Image (cartoon, rainbow, N blue to C red; front, side, top):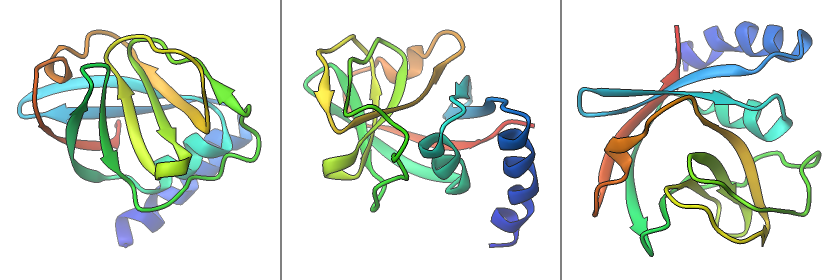
Length: 136
């Protein structure tokens, strides 16, 4: 709780300056930097960090995990066509969806951001335990 309260000024500052936020997705000892969009949904997601999740494979196209709530997506389009490396939420199921391959547009899919480079550790078959945190 104290960490979440400490992160609020940084989130507010990023929102005021119209800046994106940097996060790290960590799988084992592999750190995969990513950038969150400047959107209400991305800021809402950042307010949940740090998160420890087990990402499960969904049809070889994406890795998913339950967030247990829908993020604030009032400013998001009704649908989104994801690219490989996109970090999204599928609002109807309240899950985080990280796309390994591009996919067709889907209603309720909200882009949160994308990886800054390789995300090879997530491309392996099966479940992947990750920690997602704000970058320093």
